[in-house]
Each structure stands twice: as C-alpha cells, then as structure tokens.
Amino acid sequence: MNYVEFRLTVPIFDLGGENSKDCAEICAICEELGVTRLEQSLDEQYHSIYDYACARYPGDPSGRIGRGDIRVVLADLDDQTFLSVDMFAEATDQMNTVELGVRCAESHVARVSTLLGAIRNEAEVCSALLQGNLGLAEKLQPGNFPRQVNNNGNIALQHVTIYRGGVRHSGKGDSCGKGTVDFRSNKLLQNDRAGIAALPVLKSLSPARHLSKTFGSFGAQAMYVFFPEPESLASFAPLLLPVARNFNAVVGNSLFGDLFLRDSGTGEYAILIVSTLELVDTGEIDEAGFREQILGNPEVVRTLLRPNDVAELAQRLGAPDRGAVFYPVPIPALGGPGEIATFQKGGLREYLGVIGQTVR
Image (tube, helix red, strand yellow):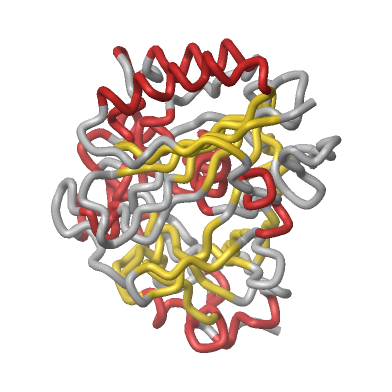
C-alpha cells in the first residue's frame, strides 16, 4: 500500500474550535483516518507547555520560546497512518504557529487534501500545503529523539510523544510508519515516605487548568519552577550527586526545594525529594509528559507541590522570588519538627547546601 504525506504550518488557534475542542477539519481528518483524538485539544496541549516562571507578565512569549515537543497520534488500526503536530516555539515566531503533519494511504488523499486546504484557507498566516513523500515518517522515528533544535543561537532539546487509541505510548521501541509499534508499558511513580505511593501515570491532565481549581488566584506559576535551560547538578548542588545516580541535570524545582532532575543520556526525568534524599524515577522522557502526567497528577499536587501549604506560607512570608523556596528551620535532619509553622523563606542553593551536608 502506498502512503502520502502532508505538511502545513498555521497558527495554533486556527486548529481550535468551539468549547475548547479541535476544529471541525481536524475532527474530520481523524474520523477519515481512524485516529482517536486525545482528550485535550491541540490548543490545550500547546498552551500547557507555557512556563509561567519565565514570563515577566501575562502572555509574555518568553514563557513559551524554546519549548514544545512533537505529538504523533497513530491510527487505531494502522501504525503507518498518523497525525502529527510540532509545537516548538521559535524565538522569531510571533503568531504561535505549529507544523501539522499527516500520513495516510492513497485512498484517503483527496479527502485529507480538501480538509487541510480548508484549514489553510481560513488561517491568518500559513505556509504552502506540501504533499508527497516528505520524509515525515523517518523524521519522527523515536530513535531520532531527543534532538537538538537551534533556537536563535540557543540549543533546546525536543522530544516526541506517540499516542494510539487516545492513550500515550512513548519511549524506546516506539515507531511511526515503520511497521509494528512496541509500546512501553505505563510506569508507576512510587515513594511511600513522601506520600506518593503506587501513583499511576495519568493522561490528559493540564496542570494549569487543574491548579486554577485547587489553588485559586495563585495559578500554575506558584506551583513549581522550570528553568529556561538545564543546569549541571555538579555545579548547582554538588553535595547531592551521591543520591542522584545518573540524573545529572537540574531542570526545575518545587517551592519546597525538591529538585526536578534529568538524565542527559536517556532523557528520563526524576524527582529528588530533598527533605528525605529520596530519588523517584518517573519514566517520563519529555518535558510535556513530565509536566502533564507527573506534576499535573492530583496526588503529586497534593503530597509534593502542596498548594494549600504554599498559599499559607506565601500569605505569612510573601511569595518566593526566583531562586527562593520554603523550608523548615531547623531542618528535620538537624532535629527540627518539620511542621509548617517552622518554615521560612530562603535561597534554594543555600538550602540544598545545608541538606547536602547530611548526605552520608
């Protein structure tokens, strides 16, 4: 069977419809190809990558620049047919554009071409609609990721996430347009002492949307910090290296000083619960998945990010500035009770230096 590929670049808002759903053309393409759409619309997925900690004001493009992975949604019964969306935001992009890709059998080409043409005709700005053997399947092979993207002189890492039947499947062994897909099984995030026990990886959770319901006016920016660029753990908190295994890059932190780490070799994310010096493997290999599936999980929000405690401390001590966190004084390892009344606000690096002295 012969397959044809399409590529089209348009603003993300041109792919959205009413009531936070995908536009009619995207829905029709998925129906035509037997692709199960995700619970989150493409527009919601795009905006879920926004990093409020990097934004200087509401809507500041700095919160999006240099971020954005690729979503690939396979047809339910044919892994050589798929819809893809590259959501990477370049520094020069002022229109929030994404690259839409489609691969389908020849029998669907006429219908898909018509629907993509309709999207292009309605778009405020757009690229040419390309059709043919465009190398899309080869480009999206998971073995090519993470890949380095030159973003106005800065290098960013981009990952690919693959879905089928509305369920996320990513990791080694995944395939797009290359025969059978060997999906990775879902992993559990486990850490009993931190209260994150046997936590299943959830799909289609938007942290920002979830937090607006549980955390009031603080919003998503008050929950955690993601760094614009990863920092070496060896320079950021060298005393914690013995407990971090191969997770050698710091990519962010909770407001209680827990570190979000990444293995630069495999791309996997982990959480170092600093108060107990316990490392939690998450099984996630892309930033969007880590944010949505792990940090957006209600149990992680309740036990690790602790929005109610953050709200109480922010009211008493003021919201932490960049590089600051809340921590107990004295820390439990030095005899402190660890109760919320003993928490103070201070520098993250200083806190990690104190904790690091307790590493045996």
